[in-house]
Image (cartoon, rainbow, N blue to C red; front, top):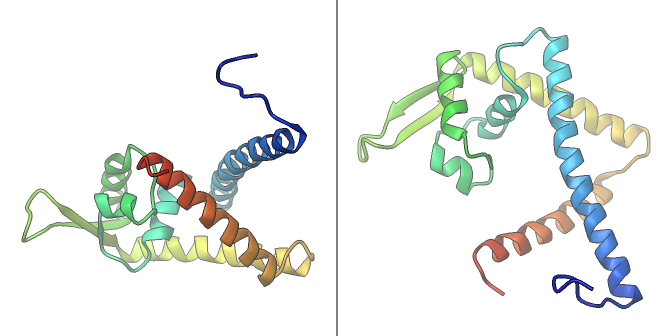
Length: 165
C-alpha cells in the first residue's frame, strides 16, 4: 500500500471512485464545450478566433474589465489571458484603453463585432438549453441542483488553493 493511499473502507472507496469520475467528467465536458463552440463557429464561417477566445467574449458581455478581473471574477482560468485579449483587440472584437489612474492597467470591452459574436454564442447556448428541456434531459430544478453542487465544489477547491482547511 502506498503512503499516498490511505486504507479506505467500502463506502469511502465508492466515494473516491465517484469523485474521480466527477473530475474526469468535468474535464471532458470542458473539452466538449470547446468543441461545440468550434463546430458552431466553423458552421458560421467564423474562423479567426478560437473557442477559448469566443468564451471570453461571451463571459465579458457588456462589462468593461481588466485582465486581472477576468481571472478574479472567474471568467477565465488560463495563464495566457493577455495573449487572447491582445488577439481579440487586433481582430477588432474588443476595445482596449489604459486606465487613467493606473497606466499599467488596461481595460477591455467588446466592440460591435464582439457583441455580434457574443450574440451568436448566446443563440447557440439558448438552443442547447431548449433542447435539454424539450428532450427531457433536465429542467430548471435539475439545472439548479447541478449548479449548487458545482458551486460547492468550486468553493472547496478555492479554499484548498488558499490553504484554508
